[in-house]
Amino acid sequence: MIKIENTSALKRMDELITQAELELRSDESLKVIKKGDILSIDSFRNENEEWRRKNIK
Image (cartoon, rainbow, N blue to C red; front, top):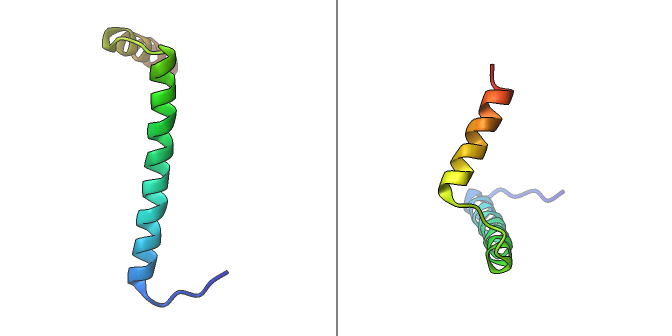
């Protein structure tokens, strides 16, 4: 464990972690899009609505 007293260092670390996570998600999304494994907005909406009906009471 590292003791960090400077809050700006913590904030910067948080920003870097967030950036890395967003870049990873972006890369994963691009791979899926290139494979053509996508849904139309209407299909996505319908699947979400069906899931909601089954899982939320």
